[in-house]
Each structure stands twice: as C-alpha cells, then as structure tokens.
Image (cartoon, rainbow, N blue to C red; front, side, top):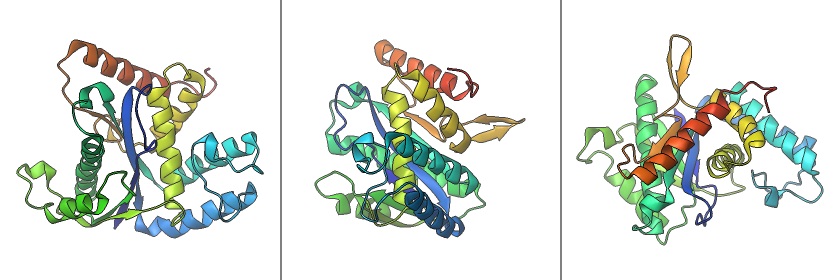
Length: 264
C-alpha cells in the first residue's frame, strides 16, 4: 500500500508568481512509522514546540528556532525522505494559460493530474494499491471534488485517466500527521525553484535534493523525471510566448538539478 500526500504550496497563487504549482509525496505504508518517529526527533532537536508548524515557508519559522536551525531542520527532512524511499511529484502550470478558468478549476486540474500519475505509479509498482490524501483543498466544496474523483474513478472515458488502484481519496490538514510536514517542505522547495528564477544558489541546492527524490524512469544508469516526478502541464503548448516560458523553466530546472554540489 502506498500513500499520496499532496498539497498546493501557496493557497493564493497569483501574480507575481508565473506558475501555478501543486505537488505531493509518494510513501510506502511500511515507512510511515519511521518517518513519524524521525520527524519528531528533528522537531525536538531543533526546538520546535508540539504546537509549532514545521513547514517550508520562513514565515512559519517559530521564534525560538533560529534561521540557521530552520534551514538545517528542513535539510534533514530531505535526507529522511531519501532514506525512507519517498518519491516526489511536482506539477506546474503557467498561470497565463489557465487565466480563463476559475481558480477552483486550476486546483482541480492539478489534483486530477496528481491522481492520474499516482495511478501510473501504482501500476508500475506491480499493481499496488493506494490512498490519496490532499491537504484541505482551497475550493468552495472540497468534499464534492473528492467524492466525484472517487465515484467516477472507473468511468473515465480515457483508460489512462481511470483510477482503479486508488482505494481512498480524502483530506488531511496541518498538524494531523508529520507526513504533511514532509510534503509541505518538498513541495514548497519545488515551488521556490519554479517561481524564483533569479535565486539560483538556493534553487540549485533544492533541485539537487529534488532530483534524488523525484519519481523517475531509469534507463542505463540515467534518470528521466519529466512527466513523472517533474510534471509540466499542459503537455503540449502551441502559443510561442507560452512555449518559451515552459522551455526556460524546463531548461533551468534540469540545469539546476544537474549542478555539482560545490558549484554556485
């Protein structure tokens, strides 16, 4: 059994961010106890109180935790994720393409894409079963979306959009599981890289870490995360100006993730 824990890193994603971002982590159920225990240790070691959030944004740093400690604690989360075989999926869509749709539609498109990719992941894991858990979706009727996604999972017109291996689609919220901290930190890091092209020093660090976690196709010793752990949508872009934005993003993310650790 695998879990998808998914979240939108910024619940009011508008300009000046260029891309709408969604993302999630894929975790084997057997690793959940170890992740919970280790996140509790990280929190204790860096002085987080039991009620303090542990998230990516510096705005969520508790006052008794220094900036340096906060950065180190998040780095330990990446190491823990790698040690427990967590896989990452990051979804990005240009705001300009989705501007004619409602914000709710943007969110549902992102959630749909993650569910479809989760099904593909389960197929590739010898037809494993899965549970999908979304941080509370910032839409008017989040339960309606979850109900619709589950009830129609076998009736999609396109076979590739059916979700036969997903047994539960539900919501979680901050503070109810340490898995949400891992998800928030990884997805927040991806969002930082996508929407901050000028902050290449931090971006290179984050993308190197994401590369080690991104769900990827592996061939001849090389990894190919595009359309798996790095999910850029729509897959076909016809407007030249929009295509240029995607080409720049793809080039930059892959350049950053392939830099050497000592390269600035």
